[in-house]
Length: 290
Image (cartoon, rainbow, N blue to C red):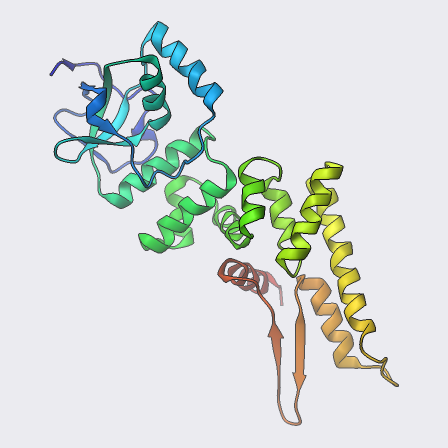
């Protein structure tokens, strides 16, 4: 097996995460047969543009692969940590050997490295990004704050991304294929049901609405739905203070609010739509200043 003593990692996994270990000597680049290198089935990126892959394959065929893949030794084969797009392009180009850097990493570290590489290159669509954060948090036990720190994002950015997982499957597909942006999708989540969200999404696409226009449309739709609901109930003979409070809070929080007023005590009931929306509600309540 040929070993190239070239130093460094191109753009550098060292810039991605600081506590990895490289086998043999630090930064050593080794060549491996392409057939011994396999993708990671848990790679956060699932979508690869065929035209872009072919363009990269043509470049690699002419100039070679300039940046090594990051892999880990799985005993009998090597699994890709970072660089699956380059690996796919090498296959298209008919390359038989590829430069690699062999890194010792556990499953969580592999996921972190893959997430950071893709985020730095803006390779993930919003749903892939959200699912990657979900894996870091729910499978590897990181908090939202820890996950955000690992990938160089703010915690609110991670929380907003996770909200997209509350979308219906059809709306997720619209985000994946680019018909809806993440901003459009988050605005849709203020609406009360998948059916209403789908109707709004179709309007967004047909009218090519901006995110700001979408937010205004969703507010109007929510108000219309609330008005229609209220018209089903006979108007009270006198001012209903509790009811007015409910309407004001419903409008302010973008969700149904119910106040149960007893003789000696009462309670607030706030609707939420999935665990990610619960997290958003929790953060909204915490942000209210006294």
